[in-house]
Length: 297
Image (tube, rainbow, N blue to C red; front, side, top):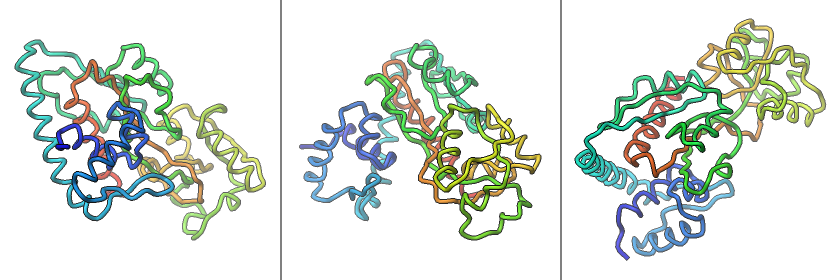
């Protein structure tokens, strides 16, 4: 067996997704096939690339040294693919990229126009993104949510995890519990809460988590968007669930309360209508911006 660019991209997908199941969705093959391919790749390289853990996989020390070289190979091949594609298609193609939040819109506002493609960013409600993608009204969609999304797509679509964050509580800077160590939900049973409407995943997570420690949260306000949630929290008379990056974006404080929930930024696209290099460029840009924002906060 000789390694080719497909194998390079399989290894990178597993490294990025930290899950063979999600990586299989990203490269567009069944999970058992990717596992078998990985076994053959490791045998060919005579080294173990990933360690299996209960919540996914992690790179071995040897694989960590290999990854930068594989990324360089992938980048070079993507550049070659783009050059060939541009040489055979003189007409500039439209690329409709849908986002589900103002934070994502701002992150992508400075994304450079892909060569040979006219990028158009579409701001949309999160619940309309996926139907628009499936119906061909969008070529690429990215949003943030709590649940695993791979199952909702036709097998022809690719799905990639861009970033993951723990869900905790968001407090105003002067909240009396802001400096507390080992904060728990029970410590906030007398607080007012701001939440998304009933039936949304974050609302249900709040209610179920509070009930698990013996109380029903007093939800004073409801918000239907991140900007709305931020404006309500600015009143400083309520708390909410959220991520560290969201808390930083609204000038609030974030505290872990031991919730098992993870907020995942997810991208999905149809590879039959979008060049691989363009999809990879957007994903890499979002990952760099996420890491830069996390480092700043």
